[in-house]
Image 1 (cartoon, rainbow, N blue to C red):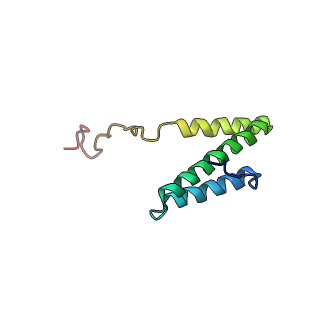
Image 2 (cartoon, rainbow, N blue to C red; image 1 turned 135 degrees about the vertical axis):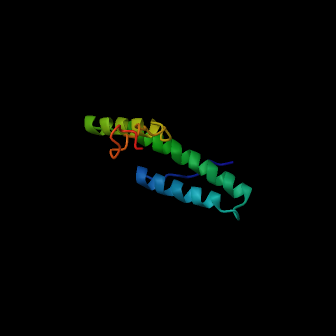
Image 3 (tube, rainbow, N blue to C red; image 1 turned 30 degrees about the vertical axis):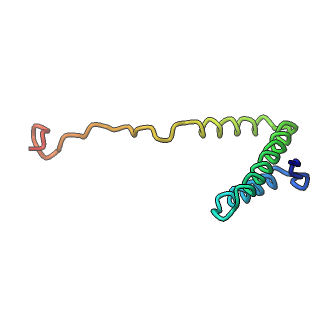
Length: 99
């Protein structure tokens, strides 16, 4: 099996756009298993290229801080129970019982 040629994808945006297309194609029920495996190989090659691009990119301190903040927010649990506060007694009853 030959390694997919991903040389035409030079920017991170081009790579992520192609990966989105690959995901859509793999989700198509009419795509054969063989074609899905070829797309998977291409996605792996694109992912490696994206990692290489990130490794050689110099980020400003502000960009690094923003990425850390985004990663922290993405790791935060989203299904945490909502805080509840006790109900206040009804104001219409003289003793505050609502009766």
